Length: 555
Image 1 (spheres, one colour):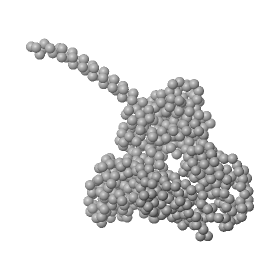
Image 2 (cartoon, one colour; image 1 turned 180 degrees about the vertical axis):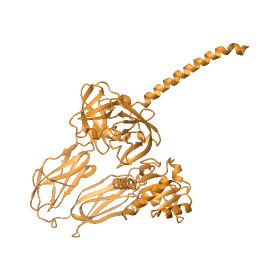
Image 3 (spheres, rainbow, N blue to C red; image 1 turned 120 degrees about the vertical axis):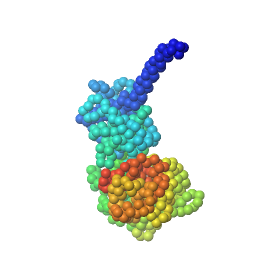
Image 4 (cartoon, rainbow, N blue to C red; image 1 turned 45 degrees about the vertical axis):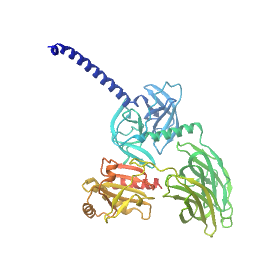
């Protein structure tokens, strides 16, 4: 009886709990949907002449990012916060390499809501993401759902790759994670072959923003320009800029110049160039030009120099403009100039051990650039350089020691060192990390039962066969969880001549949690992962182009 008597009370209590549960669910859904669409309130439309693009507010002081291609070269730029509410914009930075532009809003604009920038280094493959932006001609925002299908690095720049159904014209759209943080911005080149679904990582966006703010605060200037050194028919020019930038010399018999040296594209503060094959005893106009990463340009005043006799043979042989730069944990570049064509030699060794290695080039050149590889991380190095001219004149200099930074962490992400491995050769020997040290590596993980892997094997075999011999590039395939007999039959069937190794326990595939086979990794000379591709290449040309781009970028 007591149970029956209390039953209505239990029902009423259950109903109250159900209502509370529903309200709680609705509230949580609203919160989550608000977070998931966190970029929506930060999106604007950018008008650049007759082009309309998506923009993202990244700072309450009126800084907006958009695709570089949309605003580059535009005569006028404005930002629309809502229909009919436009404010003039000023382009602060156009980073063409990354495909991003930074715009500063002008005028009395209202309070802005900047997007919340996330840490793209914490993004993992298959994380769920949204792509929010404007389609061309559509005043309404559109949000596309997808997942991160790859963490890529192209030409030294980090990208996320997503399978969201992006369309042409959606550059500038924000890629957000479940917390509503922006972890990427859709790149202008996201529809190029091999670059579908690419989004510039948020940490790259941070880098560009920092550079843009620096460009606003302190314009690029040429702070020193050394008097040109004249050696017969060639002239050496050296200058310094207020921040890292490219370098080039313009010259000619008139102030209109008409000639240029090859540009030094590495962004440096110290610059030097040799202008060669000039006419003897002739006056030449010169000026130097530098451009920073934001496209901001600095140009020197015009100056005139007069060459001397047609040969520098009588001049004293000399080394100048010595520099060590692009120092990584396992590599560094040494450069210098000689006033006569000469060979290049660098002796270097660890500060404590005294072990010395040598890199040399017998080619007779004025401008010398030697890349030191297979260095040890977090180590102090002593360096000396030497050049010998065609007249057996020798000059040597001892440089100030430099330190390599600590090594990258060990993991399976971009910018991490690959963990230790021990593969088997078909002859029964071992192939380990030690065998790839100091080499650039393109490795493809496969299985003999995978049809796509067969196609990738044929592509790679052709690329490997046609690759110039004697370079520091290694290419090979790794067959995971395979028997030796199956791999040998596979090689014979498809006529493969490239190296194929066996990972019988799938050590790396399981340790790195690869979700797709085939998977490709690109490693630099320190065995650091610089690029990653999940799935196969569409054709041999795509694979070959990607390998060449990686090789040139990591030189």
